[in-house]
Length: 189
Image (cartoon, rainbow, N blue to C red; front, side):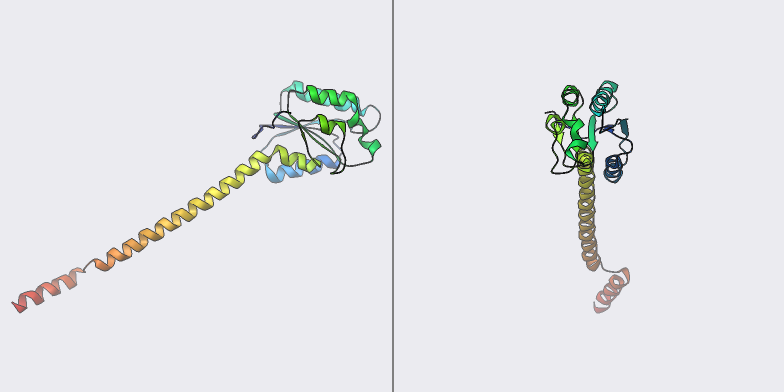
């Protein structure tokens, strides 16, 4: 099993253009890493000829070399609806892909041969998008934490310097007071 790239430059998605799974995946990417380009390789995901079409879409994505990670997604359904992802040609295409593949087929309880062959299995199509964008999402959280830490450290440093200035200001004698002291010393002599 290959590791997924931490910061993919482009994500490929193999699914049907009409699938609710595609909308879910695009929404997850828009929320987690909106800058990330997405390339969809449309294919039927159920019915007669779907397995051949899915395998061809995976091969087209792999040969295009346009993406760093490939998501193969489809929403839930009956065993018959998901059967194309149990076919040998799909399994072979996934195994032969030079691009790491995340399978997000069905819902949590659904498991297909494609899930087992892929480099990573996601419980849902949305979870597949979350896996592919995890590096960017985590980097964003780390940047926010570092910004908060930097802000806190700067505030603390400024407060310490302000207290030091207040302390020094109390030890400074005003020129009028100094002249008055000097006059009183000369008068007493």
